[in-house]
Length: 443
Image (cartoon, rainbow, N blue to C red; front, side, top):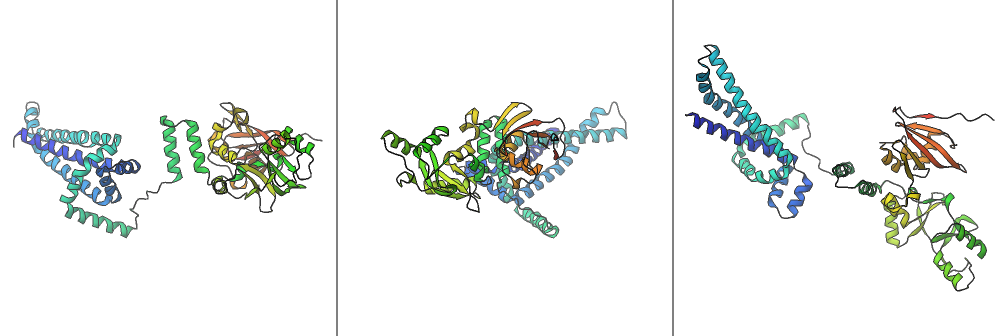
């Protein structure tokens, strides 16, 4: 054959190898989510790609048959195509036996370089860049190749499956989407600028609603403002003026004996109409929705939705009131900083390396703000104040501190045994978790 005939055969083999290389990478790298969207839009080619991904044995077998057959043919044809011409070109400068060896070596290098560059490297980079588009274009010819080589595909695929069973190797791929996969997609979206940082934070909180307890969003017992049935009208007005709210819990003698709640608007109407205020009036006090403290935020929202309530009392296993929660509290827990004025934010950055935190800040928010993967034994507490108490093994006092994951957590304000505020500082080193107590002054 002439040089032209050999060159045409080499180019054909390179094109064939390019087809199989692009098919291999494109079908492996194509994202199922995007392919399902295309299939739902009526693209039949996307359905075929999904079918091949679901049963990759036939696909990989025909690709390997094609690549290996083309590589062998390329070596045979390439050696005979280029060696004589290189031999003639080098004849004036070299003599045998080096002339034949060098000619063969250069022919081998030339053919190998062409296959590496044009049949392997460039096609695979293109397929990695736009895998779905390439897969849709090549899926038709690939299915034809599978049909043509069906006997060989069946033989090699059956042999491989038998060997996998003997070696007890799992070959089926688990395509279940986990929460970690979703978080990774959101992180990638935020890095690409598709998602705003606050949008990413809100979406992460939505997925965490199943694990965050309702106690993380409630108003705690010690912060409650409530009425007693025995309160006089002057006492009721004083409590409203000192701590105004839309709804007030109504109790009988003590907080744990709940009678219901009263809406501040009804009290205002009584005042406007000149009527006396008495909490023993059944028309003022409404029945109260009660939920256990073991519920998650998601379950609490479901309770609110089904009962059409927006105010509930949270009680523990001993039937003691641990706090109250409203639909706005649940909304704030999901929306985060979007729904809170700056004065009510629980985490305030002083600079790049220090933060002021409320003691009631949920530990999940602290992990997210400081990029800390975990806290020790975090099932034992829900807030950063609980973390301090757990680590110190005592009621925290001002200047008590704990070091964890390269951060120093220092108590700066305590109100009646309650950790009100902490100062968190990033340290230069990243030591292991330990307890660092500043000695208290001697009496």
